[in-house]
Amino acid sequence: MEMGVEEVAAALGDDPALVEWLGELQRAGEPGDELVLPSAETALTALLRLGAPAQDAAEIVAGLSELQRNPALAWLVRRCAQRTVADMGGFRPGGSWPTLPDGWDRYFYVYVFLAVLPSVRAYHERRGIPDDISWATLAALGHAVESHRQRLGTGGIDAPFWIDLHFRGGIYLLGRLGFNRGDLGFLAPAVQAAGLPYQESAPALGVHAAPTGPLDPAACDASFDLAREFFARHFPEETYRLARCGSWILDPQLAEYLPADSNIIRFQRRFQLTPETRDGDADMLSRIFGAAPDTDLATLPCRTTLQRAVIDHLQAGRHWKIGFGWLEL
Image (cartoon, rainbow, N blue to C red; front, side):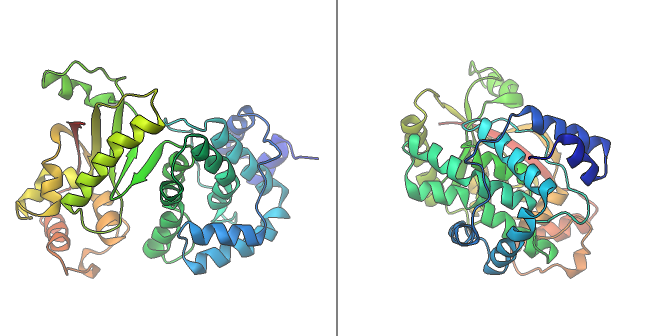
């Protein structure tokens, strides 16, 4: 017999925020029979296909038997997976993803996405999405596991809410760049100021530079060309005429340090930048160095112009920003 919310809450320590989260999961509905944890062999094959480092893949598979013996964890995995599957095809934030109490499995959300994997693969197939794009997109899970080990030296997963978007069919990796389905949102005033009649609810593709190497202009051109064709073909009910981007790459301060013909500055010039910014120090350290916000700057490498720029800027008492921009497709 499946555990109830009260029993799981007791196992979690009855933290009020977590109890509220459990109620949210219960309201998402009963998991279907197809939402089960994979066998060790199936999990290992999937993890390696998704790009998880071999060490982490082995640890994740080794933890499966313990997870299956823990009724509270098994309940949580299936409920979290159900919430994602219930919104398959959605592209808005999928609810909270709290940190679990100490002692609970650090790979918990990896197990959630392994349970979702058959459902999202079936969704991609129904949409006619090519196999190579499907697997390349879902490999965000492997990248997140790899990033966690690089930054913190231990197994785990970064940003489950971001991986959830991939496993709901909201974002696709198309060559060098990723594109998520969405709307214009708070950038609407900047677009309207440029004379274009688009509201906040206007469809707009989010643009993301995958952490896979230089932002080669030709590769980015190819990604934009593919995106125009991809979404018109596989999501014909959605018409995308605009794209938007929010990233450390769009911080105008980078132009103080990088040459005008650098890949990053050339990528910036694709977009109409807006006055909107967010604090970006932590993001810059994470993206450029794989470092935590409290890392001693003196310990970071200075092998590239960009690395030196990031460190010099911070040591001068200045701060980096996440910039925002838009373009017409």
